[in-house]
Length: 119
Image 1: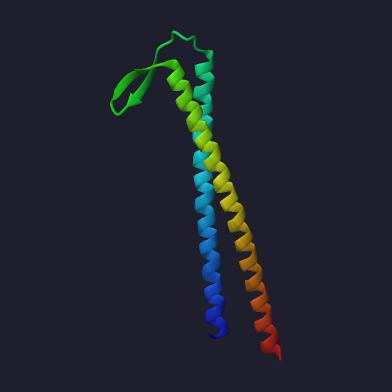
Image 2 (image 1 turned 180 degrees about the vertical axis):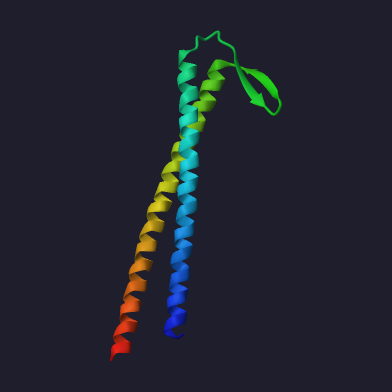
């Protein structure tokens, strides 16, 4: 494989890593937004007394829901969201490390090609 093609292949791989990283960051932002929304709901529930009516939107219909059940559902969603955020943050970290290694590889290859050209 000639130097130009190898450099292009390395560049394409780096570009793909950057794209993947952007997707992961977007996913994390969406999860953080959902987390804030659910934390808001949780704090609203904390202010309600046990006899308060809580309704859940299911399709076009509002269904009455028991407060304990609603609190547990929000708590469960928050736990799930937190786990997903941690998982995605780990993936982001791994992608960043891989992208950095690829960037170093590209720089080393470029300098190697320049040295060969000057000889």
